[in-house]
Length: 185
Image (cartoon, rainbow, N blue to C red; front, side, top):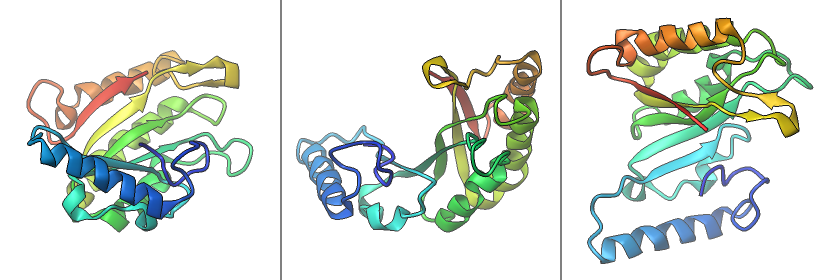
């Protein structure tokens, strides 16, 4: 159950009370059978910022995640990574470890390589050390039917920016790292 604070998933979006009841019920079912090898990742969409109303409580969550994309070409234009996630990270800093469940950019909204490089800088210098961000998953897919190409290799420069991030020792490039990264899709 991801992005429950949005209105795009029918069945559990739009009703914080029902969502929390369902989350806790599932959590308690796992606990009742002794399933202790589960990590409970609660993952909202960063926009809208109705996060707290859907939070099931610290006892029921191990990691807090957020999803957001640089896809606002029709409204806000270019949105740097730090502006997408900064207030979310600041809000939940120190509550639980934080992660980015899904994120991405594309050439429709601007320079994908610059966006990825900005993400790298912000994660390494601000979000990791200050807010406790421990992982990022990039939404590496082409949803061409909707016109959005999120692939890491959508341009040669975007791919090189991703490789620079992946090879950076902070992100695990050759050693154990404080922040894990992956492409998904």
